[in-house]
Image (cartoon, rainbow, N blue to C red; front, side):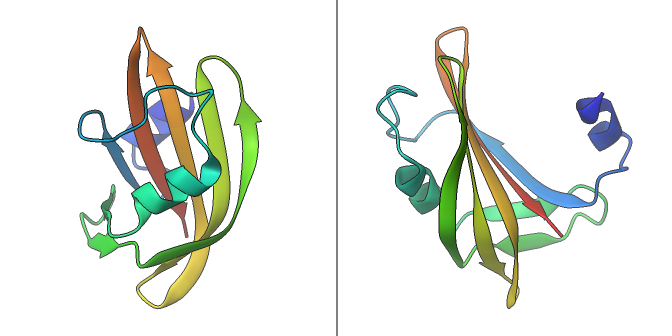
Length: 105
């Protein structure tokens, strides 16, 4: 349902997803601080306006959820001179690890 709302443009947020190139080897061994570092410098695209914004910093990151398939962390993000909320998710999809960054405005 959330994915459908995102696809329809009902959620105004920046999002980025990527599979390769990260150094995460398991959900169990990854920390929120490591995920935080993966977001800094990342360019995220607004799904509605196609505007690209660079993540300049992340602070106060906390673990929200952890299980065998997913690690979810949330914190404050500095982008375009404003602080907002970032959610960073490391997911296991059939043995492949994916990282997703979402910034809520």
